[in-house]
Amino acid sequence: MKNYLKIVKIDENSITPKYLQLINSILSGVESGKIAEGDILPSVYDFSIALETSRNTIERAYKELKKLNVVKSITGKGYFIANTDFSRPTKVLLLFNKLSSHKKIMYDAFADVLGSNAAIDFYIYNNDFSAFKKLILEKINSYAKFVIIPHFIESPVNTYDVINSIPKEKLILMDKLEPGVTGRFGAVYEDFERDIYKSLEQLLNKLNRYNTIKIIFPEHSYYSKDILTGFLKFCTQYAFEYEILSSLDHETIVEGTVYINLMEDHLIELLEKIISINLKVGSDVGVISYNETPVKKIILDGITTISTDFQLMGEKTAELVLTNSTEHIAIPFKVTNRKSL
Image (cartoon, rainbow, N blue to C red; front, side, top):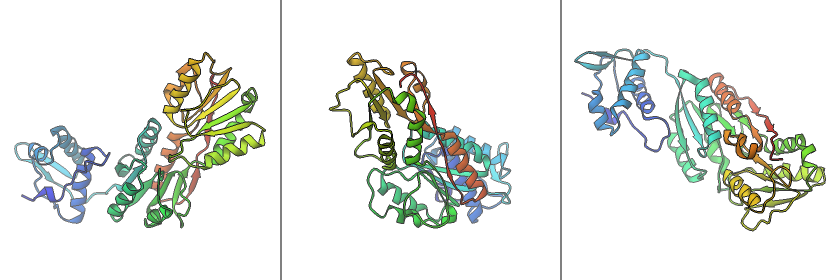
């Protein structure tokens, strides 16, 4: 029997479910000729022991391979490769900078549109440029498409050099355009400067009840500085007093101020500070939060949000994968006006 442990790999660092990793490894083995028609596969028990994973994982992988007519089983004899002539799903490396509720919306929409047309390997690099670079260089020749969210807390000047090393017909940038990336590649992104400016314009009638707008923009973060450009442009255009805060540690809350938070932790801290001095959110102090999440519909009868359409972003990115398009698509922001403003 073949030594399948030299062919099948389970990457513990990947977010991709292990059963999908197993499917992809077996299909790759068939494509490369390392696994041939008629080859007997390890039993569910043997594979689960060898790969140090659950029997359910192996059973699910074999079940999906049977649906693809690649694998068949005979009672008492086990599983074997029945067909090597199959349509291979497009291999996609999906790189997210972090996990969050809105990133899950993007992933689910992306995966749903792709369906069985693509095999997704999903990794998180935690805004760490070194980890990002290592993943790209290790896997540069292993995928038909690279879908990347390029957000880094700290990175060298030549960040774009790593991304430019990816053949452009394989590259799709998601959520953010990276300056310096050249050539014809696909992109589905937010226009950060325009989005905040236009969103605040939509809220102008309510904002006019306040005299000062402050944005909480962490000093060391992956957020685009274009957000600040749009914020300053709006405040200047409409004659608002403004301030950029890196944190709320030394902030004294006063009436007549609107706060814009980007991080969820800052939202909770802000609301606690306002409530602790008996000011009322939505009349004494205004609150606008980035990124719509279900809980913001409920907190204090509703938090006003400005947010991109994360589901649409995931769907449009998947469409670029399926059509091999190099189109650049800007996803518009949506303003949800609630009682916090």
